[in-house]
Length: 69
Image (cartoon, rainbow, N blue to C red):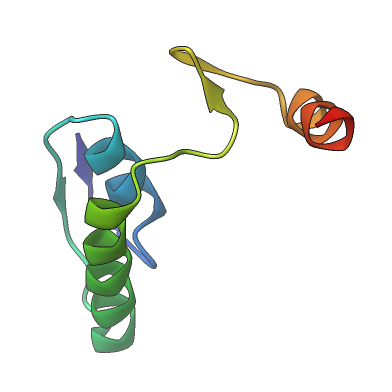
């Protein structure tokens, strides 16, 4: 996966949690720092909100599951 505008790193974090390889570019130092911190946190917690049994659930479905838990 290639992300030419990493920003805060959301795409990179999800790729990492899914075990995929990724390359990202970001020119703003503040965003680089945020993305690195989020990637480090992803090493400790590989859960992805809305991702269940290999399927990304619709945002509304995630809310329903949360309410019913």
